Length: 95
Image (cartoon, rainbow, N blue to C red):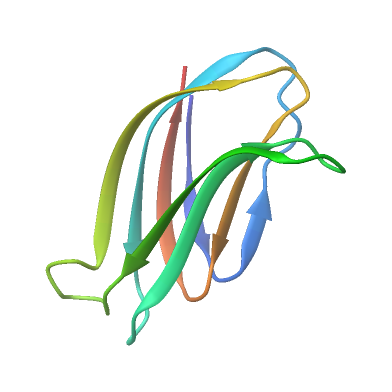
């Protein structure tokens, strides 16, 4: 399954009802300045299992995007979490 969109703030997916794996994601900073972006898996009211943290340069520069492969398990009831400090395009691959 691929989840994609644009956000400027934070999003949580709906709770996953079948265990899966977060296999990869891409983030692209659309803002005019540098931003911080975090991607992870967690359960509402609980803790985050794993967070990936990135500093992305302004849109149009060499370091304004990131592609990350991962093998992060998503347990039943967990959510994908994305928190950014600016406008960000995202593509998340879940198997």
